[in-house]
Amino acid sequence: MRETVAAFLARDAKDPRITGFVTVTAVEMTRDLRHANVYVSVMGSESEKTATMEGVKSLAHHLRAHVGRALRLQFAPEIAFKLDESVARAARIETLLNSIKPAPTPDAVNDADGSHD
Image (cartoon, rainbow, N blue to C red; front, side, top):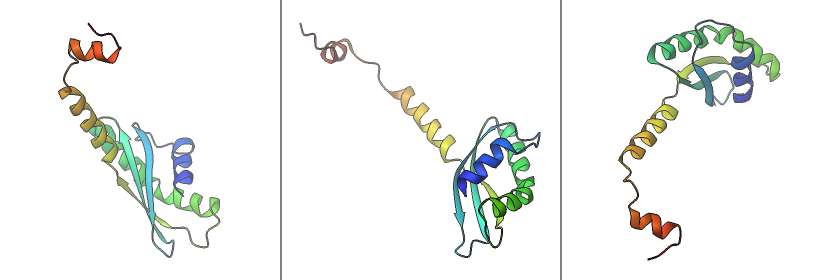
């Protein structure tokens, strides 16, 4: 399901509001396969994220039909898109950690390259 949705968004999504880089991070489906929450990560500014989410949400009906045919399901699931902030949050934490990492001291550099005085 995740791959089918990702491929649809990459190839068939023609909505001009989809301007950010969109990644499908997860899909949660109910046991009866009638409802799916599709989590997407959007890289870009806040306005790009908002516009992109509006664009993908407007594609839900077309995507539902596509998924039903592609996966040969008896009932095509209702699709709800949710913004997944975990990728952006992880990137921000990484940036913050790198900014507080101390610079290597001359002794640490000498120890790392194997040269000793």
